[in-house]
Length: 331
Ligand code: NAD
Ligand code: UDP
Image (cartoon, rainbow, N blue to C red; front, side, top):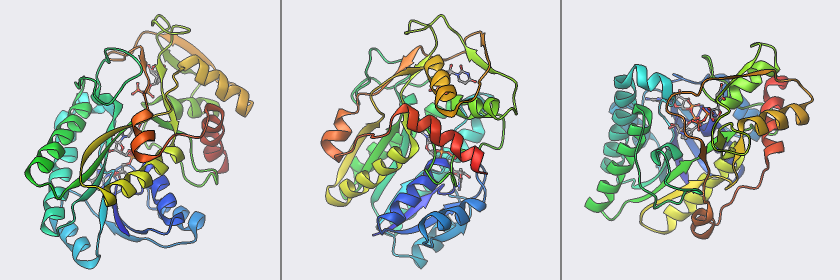
C-alpha cells in the first residue's frame, strides 16, 4: 500500500512514517518545513534503512498535490499537515484558518480528482471543549475554545459532509490526547523552533538548563494535587494507531471518530516528578496563575479504538519521560 503522509517531517508524522516503513508500506511525504526540519528525513532513513519519496511544498498548493498523485499511485492519505499552537491561533486566527482549512480543502479536492478516497485525519481532544464528564467518549458534545480547535472541528464537519455526499469515502478521524515521548533511538522527537507552548517540551528545556524554571499554570484545580490533569500518550503508540486506522479504512467505507489516549490522567506535578525521577534530573518550578482557557482535567475513554481498531496504548508514563529526555540528550 502506498500512503501519502502530509506534514510527515513533523513530530507525529515522522514517528508514523517510521512505523509505516517498518511495516513495509511505501511512503510519499509532503511538508513545507514550516514547523520541522529537513534533517528529519535523514533520521528516518537512519532508523529504518529505507527511503521515502519526498516533496517539499505546501499542501494548500493543488499543483504540487496533482504532481504527487500523478507521479505516485497513492492508495491512502494520512493528513498531519497543520499549524497547532493554540496561543498563536488566538493572536493570528486567519493564519490558522487559512493554513489548516485551505490545505485540507485542496487535499480533498485533489484526492477526489484522482479517486483516492481513503483518509486518516489528525484531530484533537480539543474538539470536546470543556467535557461534561470524564472519561471522554467519542459521542460527547463537541465545541471549541480557540481558533486552532475551531479548525479541527470545521474539518471534522467537512469530512462528515464529504462522506454524506459520496459513500465511496473511507475516513478515520483520530482525536489525539496529549502526545509526548520520542522514538527509542533518540533520533527523532519533538523539537519546537519557538518557545514551547506544551508542557513536556517546556520541562525538557528546564531540565537541560535552557530555561531556569517551569511555570505551573495553577494549583487550585479540582484534581488530585490541584494541577491540571491530561492524558499523555507515547508518540510511538499514537503512530501505531495510524497503522490500525489505515487497515480499517482499507477494509470498510464510512467515517468514524476515535479517541487515541491511554485512558489515564496525570497531573502536571505527577509528570514533573516522574520526569525528575526517571531521568535523575531536577526540574525547578514555580506555581503561577492559571492559563486562560485551560480546563482542569481531560482524559480519554479509549475503548472504542480498542474495539474497532484493535489498538491500545502500551507504553507508560515512565517510558514517555525517559524517551522524551533521551531525544534531547542524544542530539
Ligand atoms: P508538527 O508541527 O510537528 O507537524 C506538522 C507538520 O506539518 C510540520 O512538519 C509542518 O512543517 C507541516 N505543515 C504545516 N502546514 C503545512 C502545509 N500547509 N503544507 C505542508 N506542510 C505543512 O505537529 P504534530 O505535533 O506532528 O501534529 C500533527 C498533526 O496532529 C497536526 O494537524 C496537529 O494539529 C495534530 N495534533 C497534534 C497534537 C499535539 O499535541 N502534538 C495534538 C492533537 C492534534
Ligand atoms: N502547563 C503548565 N506549564 C506549561 C505548559 C503547560 O503548567 O508551561 C500545564 C497546562 O496548564 C495543562 C498541562 O500542563 O494543565 C498540559 O498543557 P499542554 O499545553 O501541554 O496541553 P493542553 O492543555 O493543550 O492539553
